[in-house]
Image (cartoon, rainbow, N blue to C red; front, side):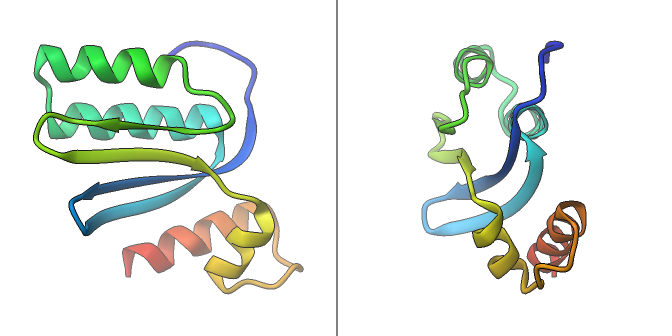
Length: 111
């Protein structure tokens, strides 16, 4: 979205509607999470209202995360998650690199 200094994560982006979760993905930086959240928002609802809302929210997203709720009830959330929680969620040992843990988490979520 814009060139800025990378903010270390990790961060989880969750896309859900009601009680159904469609996807959860881990990202190493806030910028990567923001970009994924923006792309997901655009794919779901490209209406001017939704994109304006999302652009305002994702553009000001900080390390504390944030949520955008689209008019149809779809929710896209970016949340910080510590590496210890991510290692546990991915089922990885501390011998794995952060990149390996993110890949393992995302693979586990896609399965």
